[in-house]
Amino acid sequence: DKFQTNHEAIIRYEATLRVEDSEVGALLESDPADEAGGGEAMGRVCWWSAGSWRPGAGRSIITHLGGLRPDVRYTLQGLCAVNSMGPGVPAKTLTFYTLPQTPQIIDVRVKQERVM
Image (cartoon, rainbow, N blue to C red):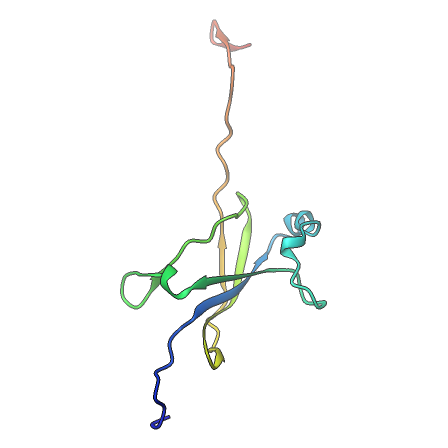
């Protein structure tokens, strides 16, 4: 709008995080933090304030997404910027997975090349 006195600024970014794995998704059903509410598909609404992103290579941006479980496939849906007019156009769905945890072996005894 050419008569607009203030420029729109990004207030936050938001998206919905969902578990792709049906077995792990069943485990998360008991977690009330994962409920989207209103009968919608299960997911966790995530949001980041405008200053929490940092510029990456080219036109990319980088942020941190914590609290994920190891060796699980996730989708991040509806990632978009939000300003005073509301949410913008969502980006394509991003599918990614977390690395498996390395097992920790405690108190292993080896005698004559045999594990006791």
